[in-house]
Length: 184
Image (cartoon, rainbow, N blue to C red; front, side, top):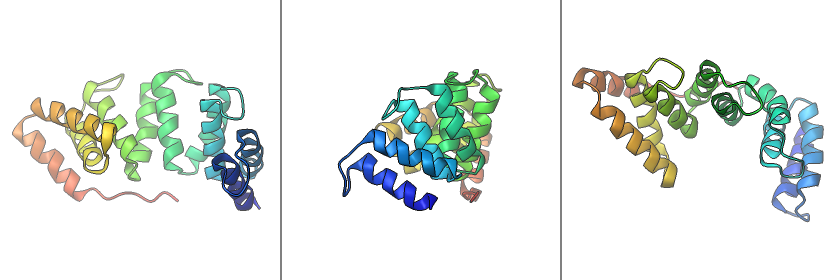
């Protein structure tokens, strides 16, 4: 039942086969999310973040994104990490931000890899780790395009400029060995 509710929510959100309606999308997302469907929980949280069909509410967004992240939903893990990084709906906690971004990055979420790499490169509330930052930024740079891809390449190059050849070699060795983790 939750899957069908979720599909109907997507139809309303995208105007496919029905008139587009964010309010109707939220109604159906809420039904599916209440049944525990991670995708619906995440998308409902995103609707609260964006103020689509509901008033924008970061705390309510966290309420729905957190259980999806706990179920291994990579985009929800990435967003929860960003919310901890930025203090949106939660108190800012760099360690929690890194933890959630790492879970998403491990699954191959290239945007999470970029955000995690940037945090580790700058030591934003966590100890700087140029080798691991270089690893994640390199993986992100290889997969992202457009503005995000350019950001990943620039950050990767900036980190590399401050590394020793041994550090770069270690990062490249780890990148060759890296394989995405499947959480679900």
